[in-house]
Image (cartoon, rainbow, N blue to C red; front, side, top):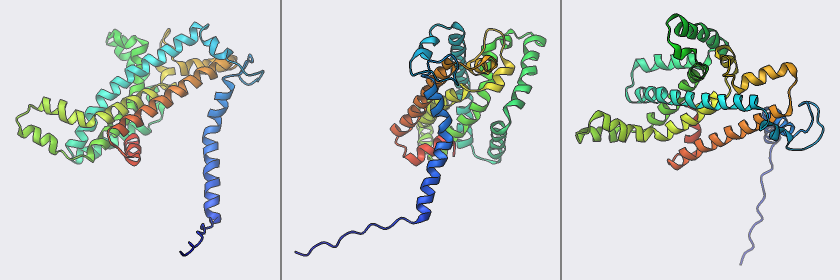
Amino acid sequence: MTAEAPVHRARRSWSDVLLNVWGVLVMLFLFAPIIVIVIYSFNTGRLLVSWDGFGFDAFLTILEKPAIQNAVRVSLITALFAAIIATALGTLAGIAMARHPGKWVWWFLGLLLLVSVTPEIVDAVALLPFFVWLGQDMGIGLFNDGLVRLSIGSSLFATAVVSYIVRARLVGMDANLEEASSDLYAKPVTTFRRVTLALAMPAVLAGFLLAFTLSLDNTIVAAFVQVSGSTPWPVYVLSAVRSGLRPEIAAVSTIMLLLTLVALALVALVLKRAGDSATQIARTMTGG
């Protein structure tokens, strides 16, 4: 028997080490503020920046303050309605772009990109007089409701995101199943419901969850279009800065962070169960 030659590990170059260190520093730069706010959510002090000790007082305080509960409730309801609106519009737009290609698609993608990159302050300034015109001048009382205003305002960016995701899902799929359904004399509505929508469903669910999480944080638009009695959580936090941030602000922020992480995990799980690889999941979630 001959002895096996020892296996020598290749020495890592300085460039690899530096790139790894740089990657760690970038991750710390991105997540350090989030880690700090999570830690300070367990602060028992009166003010957020004054650490007095570790405890769950801030989380218990949430149950004692109706103003916080109402702000969180408004944000969750608004995010749910905005996600429904964005999913309905974005799904139809994404399917249309994937199944009816042409020059119009690039123009439409340009419009979606414009919606995505337009500063929120521009959307907010445009939405406020628009809602006032519809609600007061046109006499459509629906647009005087704060939840309606917040839901529509939050759904703008989310609709573009859902459109990207659904299009990315269907572009890489052959339309043979839909053509076969038509050859078997299925009605267009039946083909859409049982074939096209079924193929796009993982992306639709992913888009819905992402739209929900994106709509939870829409501070600028919400600050402009809200009405009395429908103050969402981001606006509540903004107003609380004037009197000093309290630990319960960090506690609610931590809960919302967990909610966002759960939603993103569900997105990845839905796409994974649909048979997507890690690369495909990343591509779908980013609309690539």
